Image 1: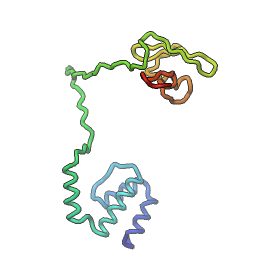
Image 2: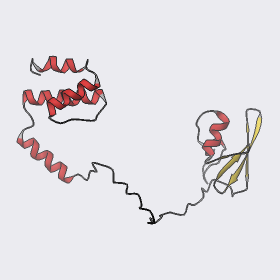
Image 3: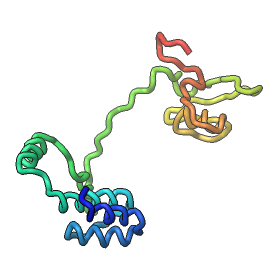
Image 4: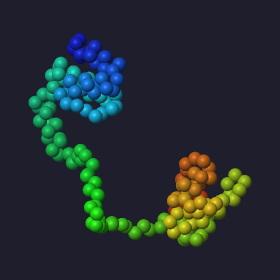
Length: 164
């Protein structure tokens, strides 16, 4: 790194985000909405070095363009166009198959845990434990234990052929 770039890069470490944005605008000739100081510091440092030492060679630019043409990259998420009033969007739903590890709705899962017996009712959509509905067995297990754990493992429901 040339001698004049070193102190400029070192000074970036002590700048606020607002100062880094202003420096970014000076160096790149455009503003940024970025608020991540580490990212701004790295981008500005790269640009300062590129300006001082020279940018990519023409050969490197051609190769990068070739690679970019072959890549199927999405640069931005798709636009979410909400339906206008009166317009109905088709609802695509796939019928969910119940997990084979679960007993049929209406069944009770019984498990001893720390001196008490837990009773969980299997519903068509979720589970009921002590009068509260939960969306998953993991949510029930978390309510019981206070920490996240796999509900199927906690209630000892293994796939066919697996051991618990």
